Image 1 (tube, one colour):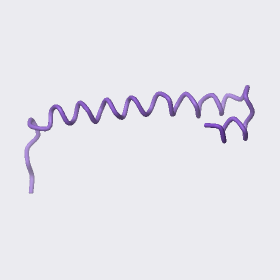
Image 2 (cartoon, rainbow, N blue to C red):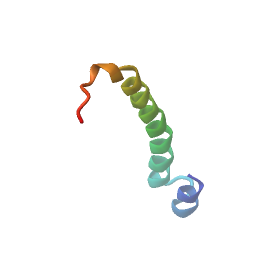
Image 3 (cartoon, helix red, strand yellow):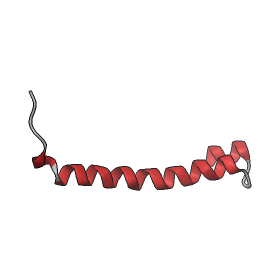
Image 4 (tube, rainbow, N blue to C red):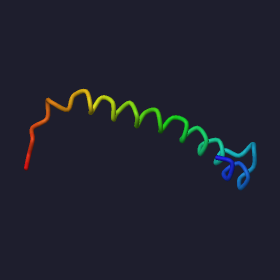
Length: 47
């Protein structure tokens, strides 16, 4: 995040998108993993 701000500047839209993207993406991915782990038994086991 600091690199994006350093490269594009504090008021840049690209820096803002990079920072907000990381702050939104990580909790969303962790939530999806938690949902997948809770519903693990409902998937067929294919081997």
